[in-house]
Length: 324
Image (cartoon, rainbow, N blue to C red; front, side, top):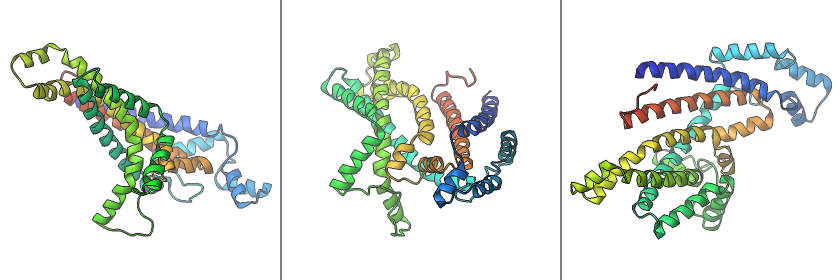
């Protein structure tokens, strides 16, 4: 059943990729102007003959169905096309930036999960206490403030005023660090953007953990464990928290999916060279092949993350059957 389910989900991933190609192809063309207009504007030369030659060079003078067929056929053969602006293969450009985004997302995901579960479990031990109320206020604050504003405030405090952390980039320009020195340099640069991303989801983890633990604490098996004389710490860790973590797995999968394609603002605030900044650059320059390639890659990654989430959920709770 699991192998059949995984196979069917992979088939659905392919169908999602096809749907993304078709929808994105037409949605992008609804925007006014094209790459020829952008390139002519950048060069300061917008003669009609020059514009016509640019459109012919990039195949923009052909009928839309012909452009769509050529693009879909190329994608089916693993070719995402050439970037209009960079004159490089789109797949190579995305693969160059994707590890940076995944590194930032992984850091934010782990920090949010660990911090949120810890804060939520502390609040659940004494509902209505000062710690619980403080946790609620902080969670609502970080959940409601815009991420770009939070990022700029953190940059102002920790990079400009205190000078503790670098304000932008993934590593120090011109330093040419290698080995552990480079790892330490990247670790310093990831703290501000990673924490900015994590605080938003940490608030959700804390509230979800608190609610789930309070709900599980009233179950009969928890009362039985206490009646057997098991210490309160073991009851909280082995029985309450373990069962409360099950819904958090689903949330973690959703968070990972959102982070892959949804951290454009934070990446641009901190000039993090990831897929988010790449997407912004593609939109600004009307680099349609690059933008379409980003949509396809992120859609496939989101589908794969959802598949991994379902499998992890079934492993955490054997009562859950895949495909049901």
